[in-house]
Length: 132
Image (tube, rainbow, N blue to C red):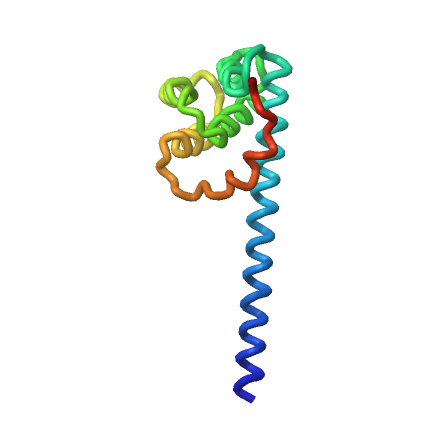
């Protein structure tokens, strides 16, 4: 009787580990696909490489608030230090630019490496096309 419970417990544990791993992988792939889509949207409107186009979109006053907030989130995910001064400036003067304070805070935390929960980026970095 005891060995049956032991085998059952091990099987349940393995199933839970597999399910958790699959959920993390799916989340990583979803993040990567959104980063790629938002980057392509920014590059379609603004010249330059990925980060330059996203920074231009964040600073664009004629762009929709949704596009600008998506660009803020994407900059945080890309982990490029060139975005820090722009996002810090926008965060301090956010009364007039209608950007989400929450998204700005999260992006800045990612960029400053204040959160250590960034392991999922390994799962999606390969999705992004190489920039020349």
